[in-house]
Amino acid sequence: AFLIARPKSHLRKDGALKPAAPQHHIQKPDVDNLAKAVLDVLTDLRVWQDDAQVNGLSIRREWVANPHAAGCIIMLKW
Image 1 (cartoon, rainbow, N blue to C red):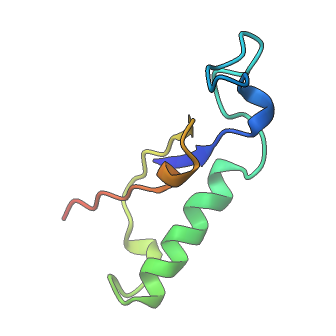
Image 2: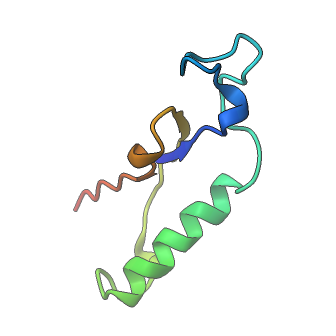
């Protein structure tokens, strides 16, 4: 999962989400580009020999209100 900080324009002054703020992250960066970046890093770290060994992916992009919570969660199953 890619956790992306919401822009301040999505939030009211009190920190609550504006009614017009988008529910889903449907803009750049593209989910396939995010996944490829992670696969390339894991290959560079020698988690596997080549990302061609990856059998499947489940990928999500989600908004987070707290910018300190932004990041990437990776779960590998062998």
